[in-house]
Image (cartoon, rainbow, N blue to C red):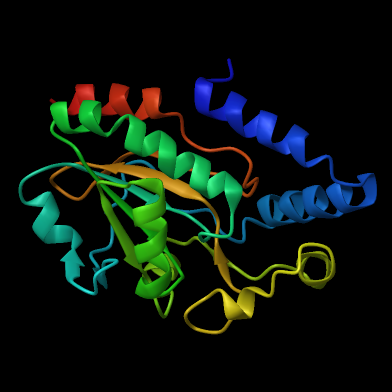
Length: 215
């Protein structure tokens, strides 16, 4: 059954009312990425790679240091230009008190620079770490990186007016497949949601359920 967040994401898709040919191009690209398993992400039971990345203020945050005291909800998002990502981040913020009450901590990562993360965190009132994977090394380590096909690049530039090489800190068109992982204090992935369809995300209720199991 569709949860609250994914219902909101579906409403967002409906509100865009994209021309059918554009919608078909984007959906076909998502299907191709999924079929090719180009960015499968980590599986439940795998060890989460450690990382140290700058937050919105430029301060370094290290996963292993955070895991020394609490489990981590780790969310990879495409960028502040993505309305689906912004909706997901707002949902995580709305459930942040519950996540904290269950002993969890939230970290979000994108390929954008800290000077893009800072206004996003301020605009959305985010009370959790928003980190910048400037060289996309962590995105690759979590097996999430892919390059949008030429047809998608054309849509982004000519329809959306969005050149991702100007959005990403490394100047590339590479993106992470949106993904969320619940990682226990032993650095083991206990829950994972990875989807080439950027219009779907892990429900906060599923995150809370997993944190309860970890208590």
